[in-house]
Length: 631
Image (cartoon, rainbow, N blue to C red):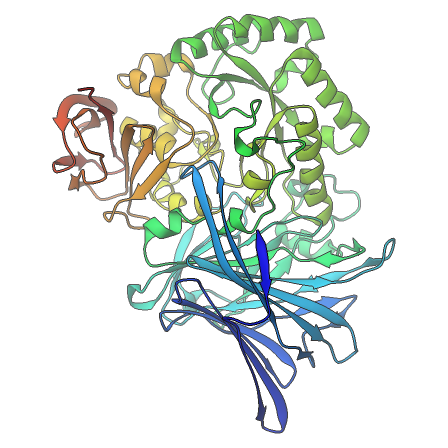
């Protein structure tokens, strides 16, 4: 419940400055540590963010235009109206319960041309967000654009990728003053503040009826907002042309009626545990439609789980081959089998036969489909009708590869209409998540990540994998297609591969490995118990972006310790203080020093007062399953 208050925690000042009116508004987080400030100086709108007095975002210009008219220059603001948000809700991912507690304000602003718009801001204990509203008229289209800049404190380090293949680039780490003018950065962009005084992560939330946001460096410590524009005529999919061509040929996208921007969001965290456990993006997103999702993320047909998939590691691509995959999935205790594009030529009878056969082993069917086949509303309806009629439970929709408004509208239409057919979705070739997990609980995963499908490319998987948990996965679930035990793993060990499935979030884990290779692995029993959603996550202090990711995760009474090691061989001691009271039986899976394609398995008995020592090779890993012993 959001409640409005006329007075409270918003400080509003008007002072004379060099003959012009300067206005400021200050908003503090519920714990008082994060401060979000607005300025209008000589009519230009600015914002800035601090935490405990430490700059997070320096004074930055907010630039918003409609039909080429810049509304945030030469403007004046009225006194803000304040409100509070305080709620909890069920969620999937790093934990099962989200806390939505914020102070907010709304402020009417009038441009020099007489146009009025509203700025809304919220301050949370783990970040800030703001958005703009411009009232329109039904049937009238206007063209919004933004060049808002996020000015990063000098001395900060930034992890970002250049939007290769839309959102499938490889992160690099640079000091902010070394990021050149014109370089692209795909949100979420993670920043370590100077002198290790915490972290920030810039992204967006509640993206709907609007173009997606990317960022471009200005060469002066600033990251400038760039909107995804409409595609050039004659180019059906964005991957058919380069980013430079897209920018050169694109045109702004018009919005009919009211214009409401997504939330421009900055996660602010003291440490990596707070960064990973943020609820900011889902807090800013609308709750699900009760008519479609009567029990939210726990609606009965929305089922997290694990899936086999034949595309990456072999398998007979026939109805009989997929029956065998379903049989093997059943032996693993997996819930799903995802069938790739070769099903296109199958008859309804063949698909239904696979669905019915798989059900004997407790396995349900997902189907892959190219994005071009769902752009037309009638074709989309026919596909969804067919899947529902035949008992298919999910679709993996691929090759969207764009975040123009037209494609954002397509994402939303697919999610809504799939929900009406009780179908789950995994969207590939996608942009970053922006809170769809809350609004559309049937979105079980999306790509927007450089995943294991790129395994044949000779690059360094190790550093990439120990960077992702603190960059891309901060924004939400990602289909990395984890785990392979053959050559595609390159320099990583089997333990490293297993740990990716436990560290990377996806409400359905679509495994890359052939199911027989999982059954043959010494860790087969671990895969049989592995959950796809968590009640609690603790990022251990050993973690460092690009070096090591050490996670303790709980599902019910069972704990998992999963560690992704970087390039340096290391031995670490892990205190087990995260465990609950009582004795646990621990099954340890660790690297063998001389062979990455093997696992040393041990059994231990331990309590929360104990510690375990893990020795990991370069590109290695360390995994422990803790089962609470009954009295």
